[in-house]
Image 1 (tube, helix red, strand yellow):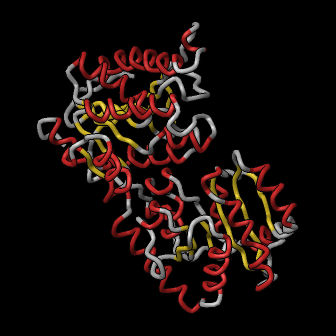
Image 2 (tube, one colour):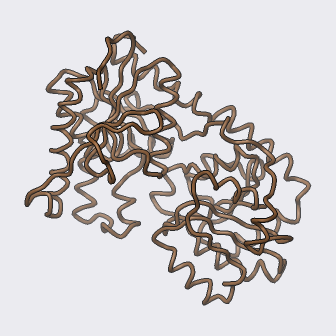
Image 3 (spheres, one colour):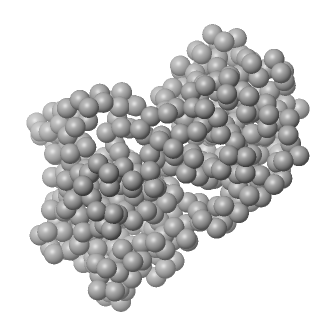
Length: 412
């Protein structure tokens, strides 16, 4: 890739993985990059060796060029903990090459801290300021995924590395107030150093009032039914087991209720087994993962979207993206009262909240909402307005301007 002469701000983003892999991480990244380019900034991008499926050292994906990093080899790469150091070493070496080529004004490293450590090495060597963006506490996510024990050695090392990067980066950003407050309170990071760049949506990607695909509804056995839906990845912290526990009580009140689960993930088999044990397997429809361009057809089948996240550090501190996408479409939703949801959803105005982990409370809120459908138009409008006013990518990404300007002699 031939680098043109610089006229404005050039940012080199350091990433764990990217599109074409489809995750919340990659979708947030793509949205940020597109909006930064719309602001007139030039963006360059590198992924660590954790990105899987790369075919070339430089790949074009959806109009964006990504420099790829080869996986480390040798004994260190195969040993626990030391393998993480190998990821840092290979990324730092590749990043040094790329930074010398593209000559960025700023290195913007995104979670996890492995990327931040590599960026700090290169930034110090080349005299380039580093911004570190923390999207979640990865040690907490590892606990939920079963790959680490809370406050075990791996947990503590990951946390210590994150704190190391936060203290040494020239500026830091995070995705929500919950994470910002926790970082300031427990990591010794001054509030002036940390800026919230909230999760958001591309308003133009979502329209209100989509048409139901009756053929798809009939195929799934949903024609004439009241559909409660969840569309996303089936992780334990999403609390889909609570939704299934609530279903028998809801069916007693309304036998036409069905649960539509679109997606897949680690909890897929356990949820199917739970549905059988509860005797509701005929009322729960598992579609498996569907192509991204087909997702809207499934959204249009749902009457009430349900987000029953369990209460834990991860869900209390991190705001999810799915409720924002639902509100952008003018959807009616019910969600657990974890901190991440309460930062987005105002009970009774833009959605309904229930006590996390309590299937009876979930059932009560869903049934109350179904009995008060005259309130739905106002709730839909208020949810859409909240997203347009406060959670569009244009509004969110504009918050980078003062962060970058302070580090780039006002170029931003």
